[in-house]
Length: 116
View 1 (tube, rainbow, N blue to C red):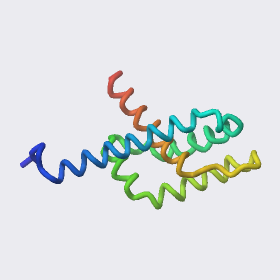
View 2: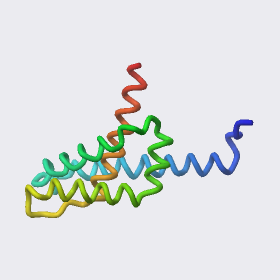
View 3: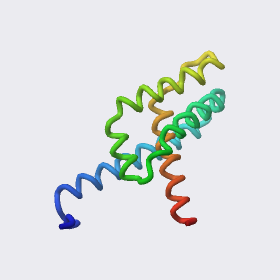
View 4: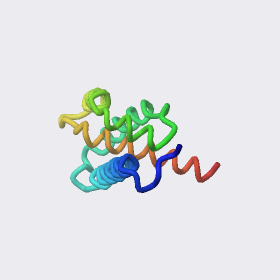
């Protein structure tokens, strides 16, 4: 039997989705700030590398669930940052890279759903 919309489990799921979406969107907004201008290209390269890793996920629910198991993504984001940092003197922030990558993958899925 499907869960009722007022059940506690669904409320937690909705809260998790809302929190993840807000976090990811804020990271995208942060990356757009002028303080990132100097390193924007390196951040974009790191984000692009991580978005590729997110392509197997086909739903927002899957993305949120995976995001909640953050250790793997923290390591992958750190690796993407190391690869992109080889071209500059400042270290990149893996949390920003991960959150922006999740946001962009989510937006890509929504756009594909609307187009299809």
